[in-house]
Image 1 (cartoon, rainbow, N blue to C red):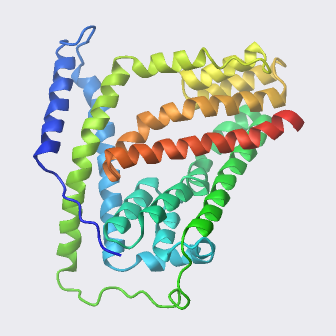
Image 2 (image 1 turned 45 degrees about the horizontal axis):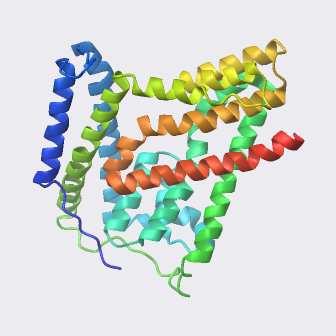
Image 3 (image 1 turned 60 degrees about the horizontal axis):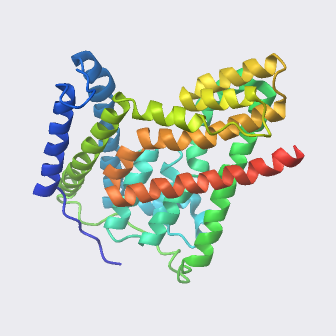
Length: 352
């Protein structure tokens, strides 16, 4: 499999970056219709600080992923999940990204894209592994945080909600493995037993890793900064607030009372914790049954998460992969996630 060498940088990307910089400056100076002057404190707290933190995480993930690939450790790391992925006709290198996804989504994605660029895995293997990573690994990565927010606020309903979302994540993972087994070629007999050794030539290895990191990180920066800046400007202009409120206006459904629709609106219009707190308060007051609370929270999850994904995941996806591929992957994963939530929520709504 040939390595895919893609040029990084280029004058075209710098032009795009400068255009976005001018766009941001014009907004800051109030040249936009209805624009507002941004204070230095606001720029630091809402733009510079989170953007630098994101670039730091992405840089560390890219450097670690590049080191793992260059030193030949990918197959060894993937050996932990080899039996499972071997059933799905996926290489051990894919298993390295799958294992990393339990600890860091950015690291898993950077490793995956690096392996594809180096020609170690095919495009279809990269896509299937990305979708696998978005199933149980991502769910379990965030479970410790969500568990201790949901359970105290919504108790029995929260436990059922967590069980259903866990079932949806497991369903997606199982479906992707079955798809991989059906669509990917089986590994040739004996190939799995061949040990993957670290490269014998150690001279200049650190320079090689650093050189590849600089090339790829410059590409990541040139994509991530403009996209993050655009999303910041849209957010500051009130676009996402308008989108949340407009979406919330269409989530009042007939099989849930108005109180449940309010829970959904809280989930969409504010943040995750506020939705859970509202759900717990309505259930405590007897305005909602346990089943109605669970369904309202799932509906709020379905509507709210794609909006949050655009705000928080789109810049890193575009930076790590490419604008086109990152957008495709994010839409695909969110769409399949929605389908899996509906698949587990519908039986509970009818027979729960």
